Length: 170
Image 1 (cartoon, one colour):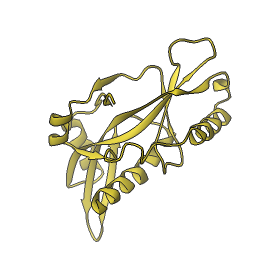
Image 2: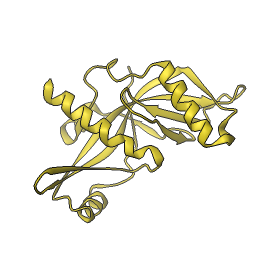
Image 3: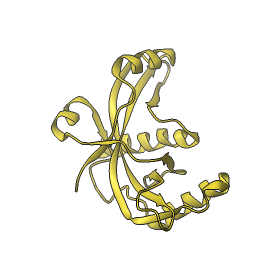
Image 4: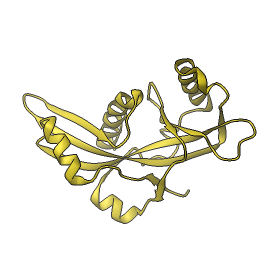
């Protein structure tokens, strides 16, 4: 399977400054494995948007337009960043029903998106770049920073914690 990753929009200097504002004493780059499915109108050849998700998420990320991605340079990326959720390929893959449910909720929230349809044949795995910050006080607190924004971004922290737990068990 061709491994793809979204381009990092925040470099290490900008990430460290933003994470220090949230009182993070330590930080590290990370990648979270997500599954993407294209959203297109009936006669369109190119995707109008993408729906990104993984099993266990309450909401998917809606990615407008094309996915600007690079091929994942496995060896270099793995040495320099924490890879989350990439161990078992089928483990975090949502069912087509999950994507349909996520898309239903997005359409209800934004009625102009009604003509777009989920295209299950376009399912692919990709890596979302993140920065993880750690604030150590009475309890260690995890801060997740990404170059994307949106209403569903709060769903990334539980996904990161689940991937960290799964990695600790393995």
